Length: 279
Image 1 (spheres, rainbow, N blue to C red):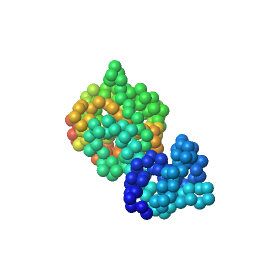
Image 2 (cartoon, helix red, strand yellow):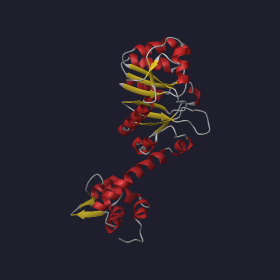
Image 3 (tube, rainbow, N blue to C red):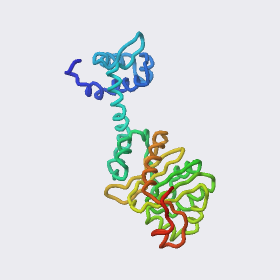
């Protein structure tokens, strides 16, 4: 192997070489398939394959190219890094500005699973309304799990609406937000708790949790900015892996929470007496 061309340089200094390796991870492919998937001419692809063959990462079997054993080891390690960089680069300003300490390390290491994300935020003249794209998709969902880290006056009525329409709804609230719900929307909160397809939980040490919505359709997460107030700016993904990632994040906070089973009075609701550890 030519040590004058380190493998890192060989792979990452050429998008074509990097993408050839990722495509071959799916299985052997001929030149025409590689060319079509890369949207490149044969003369642009062939020199890159030649370099990969010279470094023993790719082998040729008749008209098919495939990864060598060394190539498979390299690409298996390289793929999560490439996918993580893609997630971060796609919305670099968002991630750089956010406090990511509320995401457990095990899920931070799997940020690549979010896949293709877009940022979503309310328009300036609709700051106090529900984000239309979120509300539309949530009304179609059969299952909704949410961590709500800020008070919004429309949330109690919205979540009971989607629950009454048949969705399975689980909500985690910080203790301070639960107090506001009970003070301002006691009747709706009681009705929500009493539905068979709902679950309301309180997290007593969760004042800067991520604001999370995960359904069977999409996952959206809003993190607190590092130096500003909460701004309701989300990253959203429809990737099935992102949905599973979001569910794991919800379960992480659910394990830190207690279930609200009844509301007797405000003191009990945010103190002792209405909460029990989920069974």
